[in-house]
Length: 254
Image 1 (cartoon, helix red, strand yellow):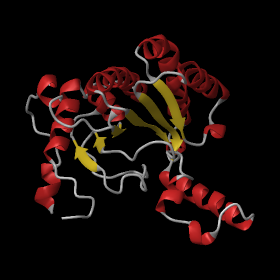
Image 2 (image 1 turned 90 degrees about the vertical axis):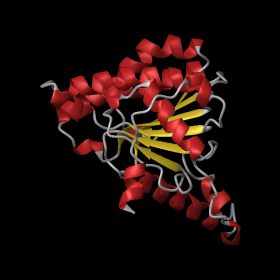
Image 3 (image 1 turned 90 degrees about the horizontal axis):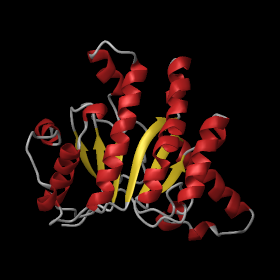
Image 4 (image 1 turned 45 degrees about the vertical axis):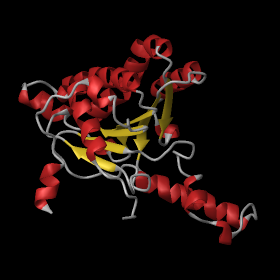
């Protein structure tokens, strides 16, 4: 098992965009963007510097995923547990969506990217919510890549909330208890109109899901790398997609 886990880590090999495009491209890629703080610490910089550099990587990887033909890119931007961090860091993290969407919105519109956000938006600061809502509104007609930010998102909270809504609908007669199956339950999740991720990437060397899309990742292919998120490049993304293309996805079959 340990050897298999090690094989999940990235290899320093070069893959061309042209070669990767000859194989199947994952329709939905989800990324746990980890390592901003460690990137900054290695350079004797404040953690906020790492988050800023991580934002530049978001721009770069969004553009590249769109070029490859990825349909949905879900980025774990801020978890429900991240509120436990120091207030100065949380305040800065809540400014990043505003900075990113204000700066890069014209580019996202030009590249036909549709912005979405999943998570508990009602708990976000007003300035963050304004920027998010503006980006969603101005890109809602776009038909290219869906850039889906998981912002103030936690999978357990999502599942509990889905169960609560489902129970309410059973009790008020909107649905029957016998009608509940996986497909119906999926319709109560925040990703109800999105396909489940085909590929999950996590940076920084950590091998865990950290309360991210636990239901949706049931049959997703995982790819872990020691590379810190600010150092993550298009070549690393190609490596992950290449590895995905080498795997046999049986979904429980033979």
